[in-house]
Amino acid sequence: MQFENTLGFSQSLDKEDRLSKYREQFHFPKVKGKQVIYFTGNSLGLQPKNAPSFVNDIMEDWANLAVEGHFHAEKPWWDYHERLAKPMAKVVGAREEEVCVMNTLTVNLHLLMVSFYRPQGKRTKIICEEKAFPSDQYMLQSQVRHHGLDPDETLVEIKKREGEHFWRTEDVLSKIEEVGDELALVLIGGVNYYNGQVFDMEAITKAGKKVGAYVGWDLAHAAGNIELQLHDWGVDFAAWCSYKYMNSGPGNASGIFIHQTHLKNQEIPRFEGWWGTKKETRFLMKPEFEPTGTADSWQLSNPPVLSLAPYLASLEMFEEVGMAALIEKRNRIVSYLEFILKEIDKETTGSFEIITPEDRGCQLSVFLHGQGRQLFDYLMENGVITDWREPNVIRLAPAPFYCSYEDMYRFGQILKEGILKN
Ligand SMILES: *Cc1c(COP(=O)(O)O)cnc(C)c1O
Image (cartoon, rainbow, N blue to C red):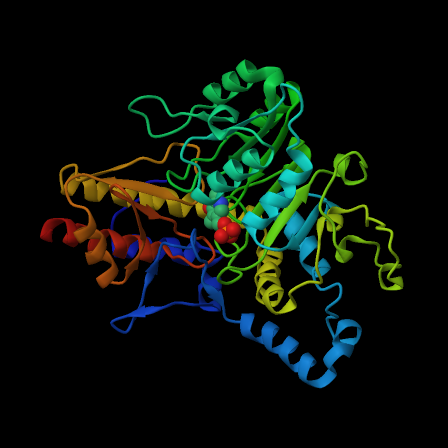
């Protein structure tokens, strides 16, 4: 399709957009009385308007039923998390039993490391990407030290090539081959938070397993953004947070995936708690741990229903719309944003550069030449919410659930003014 950088054209794309009605179902912040252009759905998704009613249901059940709410609320609390597993499994391409919603992301990564990082003999090394998200780096370093190993020798970082802004799949694959029988684990962010790159998870998973390692993915920037087929790709484990593209609310619960082949494998250790035991016998309070045989076996505590409630509200929207429709709109709106950026770049003679590679999801990362923070501040003051990453990058993620094509056009106009003024 031939795009045009005009208000009328952007509005015609909105008219054709089957998802345009969902915009009304989210709360947008306002700047100077006007709804903002929201590009940070990759950091904190907007609030679905029906989320408070899901929370209120629980507050009312608590008031009216107190402890009886565990079993007699309309949506009983003791197995509330199961309501999330089914729609969640569809979002990540998993079987329902392979998925559990629990804890928060970094906590879950640590718990999964207990199961899937057990260095033995010379098989101790972990492959990750250079400059991984800081929490992942701290998690990996502390896990390695916990096993009495040295992070500098044990963590093998895949580097970008000199002068390039992305990782090459061939470089990941050849590093896996090279580390070979010393490789215990591959753990990479499926979509990189900084440049928005989508890794070839299928190929990397296959290569890692071929040399006898486990392969896990941090899907913080992938869940609800890109197509995932965790089961079919043979991924060993994965975890993600829900407050980015999944719109569940600040700091909210994480999800985990554990491949079916590991669910009943008694040789895989884990840290355990009472919500990992069989429902039928849980309240007999016996000393023996009887695992559920599903990803729930990794669950420690009874579910934090007040935080799962807005997550469930959001997942019901994902269930209704489906990832296929979201991805179709995502492709188009990101292409339109890219087109707008290129038009503005021409008019402002090379003031920035898109560093996100072709393999991308919702996010375009833009490297600013010359102007920096002032331009970012100008955008924020004029109702464009983006984020700033050192040294000179703004990240733009037009979440397909609630961003419009008109937003992209208007953003382009504000960007141009900002560049010319600064
Ligand atoms: C957002 C993000 C996190 C955040 O971790 P929390 O434990 O939820 O605070 C971790 N890793 C990656 C890759 C992220 O993008």
